[in-house]
Amino acid sequence: MRQDDARFMARAVALARRGLGRTSPNPPVGAVVVRGGRIVGEGWHRRAGGPHAEVVALRRAGAAARGATLYVTLEPCSHFGRTPPCADAVIAARVGRVVVAVGDPNPRVRGRGLRALRAAGIRVDVGVLANEAGAVSAWFRHFVVRRRPYVLLKLAASLDGRIATASGESRWVSGAAARRWVHALRNRVDAVMVGAGTVLADDPALTCRIRGGRDPRRIIVDGRLRVSPRAAVFRRGSASPTIVVTTTAASPHRRRALQRAGAEVVALPGRRGRVRMDAVLKALAARDVVSVLVEGGADLAATLLRERAVDRALVVSAPLLLGADGRAMLAGLGVARLASALRLAQVTVTRLGPDVLWDGAVQYRGGAAIVR
Image (cartoon, rainbow, N blue to C red; front, top):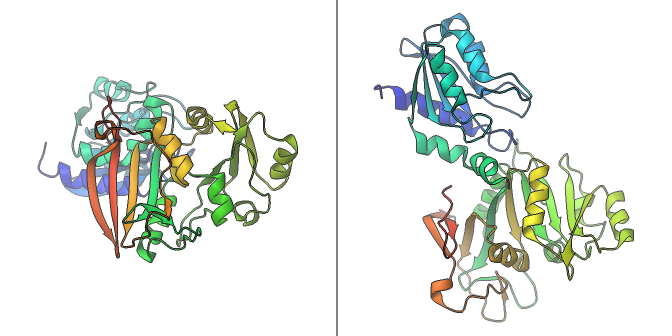
């Protein structure tokens, strides 16, 4: 690795982060063109269907790209999608060297882009800031390998694990800083998912309320179609759709009422008014949903954990004590012994005002935690 490789790749990683939440089902990618130790062009993938990061950077560099070094956070694609192959554009620009942070796990690429560049006589180096760049594209890599969305479970509870008082009062268990963090997270994910109980109890809009943000898709899991067409999630206008996932046995009359309210209703096979989470996630993957933030409630969260569908848990602990008569943040998981408990790996702990965020990959018994 040359002396300045890490510095220029760090710039490419920073650019890639700007695309988070905007590029699905494509990955967020950043690129920088360097000539004579100076950046002459840079760019990032702004939206699906738009020009990729390499193309944007090369266009901005113009004739200066010839013989230059291109830094890119993910292997250039080698296939036709909504746009032509980036590897072809890199070769046509006649750059002298390409530095790639991580390879693309997509079976349509997976090394083909690197081989095309090398076959054209371009020097290719791989692995500079691989961890940093890999973290930016982790959700995409999970999606293309496992063919289901990356699932983040957000829980906010008192120190004794309660999300509401005995009477059901829950606004607000966590503080203002934690709520701002949640809205920033909604701005990055493709979809937010809640159960019918959360809609009935809290009537959330599930929108992103930060300046310059965009609303994720809203997913409501409601096997018996208990939610009202007058709920805020349907009533408050948003450019992002609302999807209600139910069972094939649910009332056709209620389905039509929700559709008239503007929702897409997805009916899946289920038992006793419950939908299997693997079927829900498969349906979302078919709609190019790469990442899902699950925000409640206790039953939905426990169901996802029991089905081993949660990849990462984000648990906000507030400095409150509500007691055993408060409402628990999780329904039963069937854990009889500590050895069977779900654990978090690669944990980070962060202060959010008076609250504490525990952030870690979920490790299921007999399986490795998914690296984020």
